[in-house]
Length: 160
Image (cartoon, rainbow, N blue to C red; front, side, top):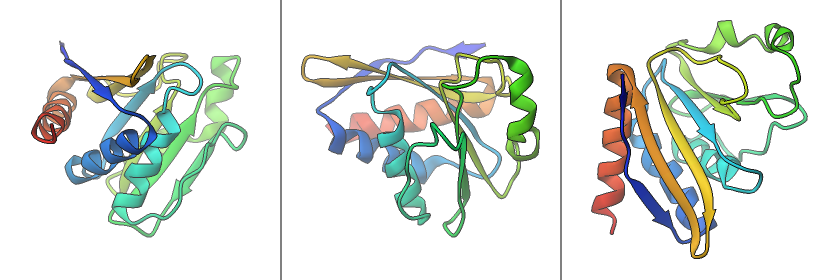
């Protein structure tokens, strides 16, 4: 079952980075996060804020490497990008089975709508372009996903 999420308007890149920072306060080891959105919608920008707030340094797009690992913070962040994959058979090479659900960190998957790789219990963040910047919708499936969505949306409501 999926919890419905309300849309939130984000003024631009700085606001998207701040969302990542707010998400960092809510995540715990083993969490899985799906990021959905068109090119340039802010998926990697959000991850940059998340990684920085967790103490993992500077994040970059994994479009060509497919998986970036950011150790050294409160949690390891495995940042995955499925954009360039064409077939489900290519997923095996990414080693997602080893990192999804690993309590040492969290797995964040960009373009997660391309392949069914995340567990049933996860947070889904959709980002889109709007005239004033970006639109974010957070929904959760499963108990932990719904909890994360509620915490994130609640923290954004409190920031208004």
